[in-house]
Image (cartoon, rainbow, N blue to C red; front, side, top):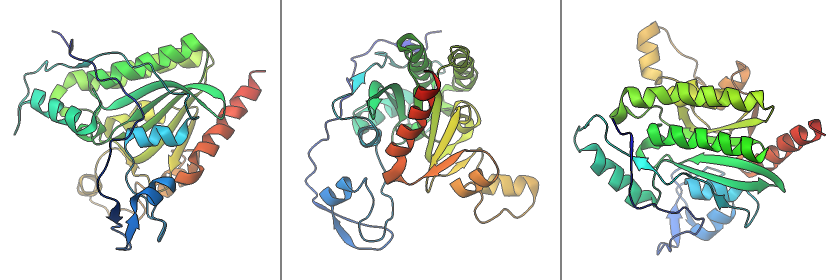
Length: 281
């Protein structure tokens, strides 16, 4: 059964589409803010400090050195191995997600540099079917780690995902094992793997590759967990802490190593990468 199929490849770039709306309203403080000012402020409300959602393009642009982006993604898109259909056929969902995001799949994969340190970086796009991991994302993550091995540089993965993609069933679940196996090769080659968890990092992605970093950094405000709060509460029949599945809870219980504010995330990555670079000399 074919998992991937040939299709016109959408080349990833960092150019933003023109947006006619100059102002937007912050859902936290209710104030109208100038969109350009928000973008210049790392998509953070300049009035109250609330985070606006970042696309994968905006996220990667905020982290890497200017003009260091080189697309290293494989030219593949998902097939429909199960002939899955709920309210819509799976191929229709894929086409709508591609049109909405301008991406062929739910991840951007690039060779770049952060503070002049070469890296291979993968950034998930939550607006592409919830950033769910299907066959293509699993293959791209594995390819990214293999590229890092080939280039002898660290691998950085920025997660924003609801977990495995239900429309691909067991094929999606197998990506957890597949990416974990290739991650072991990265460790064998003694190359750093930095995992960055953002809002949300959940399900099988959180339970597998996102939790296997040598260093795990969470963005402030991240949601980190496997199943939903209601499901867990009903399963164990107990009240959960108010801060359950927050970045603070994850740090307190040893699930992550660091918490960084969005505006500090690039410098945090640079510091960690610099530490590993010094250690190899």
